[in-house]
Length: 438
Image 1: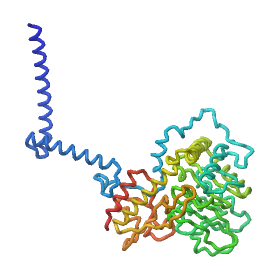
Image 2 (image 1 turned 90 degrees about the vertical axis):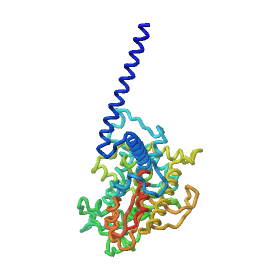
Image 3 (image 1 turned 135 degrees about the vertical axis):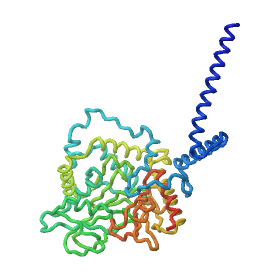
Image 4 (image 1 turned 180 degrees about the horizontal axis):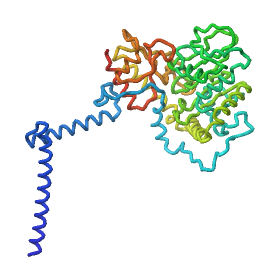
């Protein structure tokens, strides 16, 4: 009997202790809440529940993607940076692929400068070269027969190598480098960066009329406006560089294989792996390819083998999925669907706002995807209508960072906007754009 009373007393003590602790907590909370004007415990509880519900709603609205063009709570103060073409849109696809593109490199492997000393481009990894040729043949976007492959640290280095290789050494003054406006904003910067006596930036190809040799850069599809391009200078001594970074089926219909003397491609825009810093050139003339290789040898003593091996694995997976039984899950099918959705959202937002306009493109048959569609470029070339003279500054005031037309050699009423950001940022952008009225 004494044992039972003892247990009962202990239980009572525990219950009493719990009650005191709860009471103390409530007093602290009530005291804190009374500073905000709450006087009643029931009123306090109701307010706390409402506040908690509001916080949960705001959190879910700001995190969860939405197809609606209604502004999500909490996003109105966030700066959206769409100035750079950072292709993080592709992360979700590669996350789903899991270990398919995983590469393990032992510490002793790839220690030499040389990949294949017998090749013209001696630092080009044989497997990477093989997968480049295979992918172009699968997609049908470039002729690879009778071409030399030169690998570079992104297409930027390859562009510099091409300028070095194509510039005549015997000329009394630097050769002019031109491109039709709107041109890629980095062309002038890269061309004049080293103040070379071999070449110099000469501006818009449409207004170029100087006699003598020149180098014309043809970007097709064009960055920033997305249109297909041809050379525009009517000169007999012109040398062409074709930048085909965006000639892939998620951005534009592949109508025929590109067949030019010097073509530049990059992993960053084809697969989304910008951090690999890998690009390649398909070069018809052996002497030009040799000079480009020499430039890269002098500049960086080759190109990272680790990046080449990883890039080769990614290209192989893309080709395998494009040719295999699960074509619906292929990289290009996924990318095409995402780009189509984003361009649809953008056009809806532009229409709702009424302050902007965006380019229309004629539909074409894509031989690779076997469907007719309009180009859906990696960048949107947007114009501010009405009295807005500086579109970049105007959108900056709305906390949207873009790159203005002056950087591309045209009117500041235009801006370039990246279409390749993560889903959350892009959807926040189109929601905000749709609500801009002035």
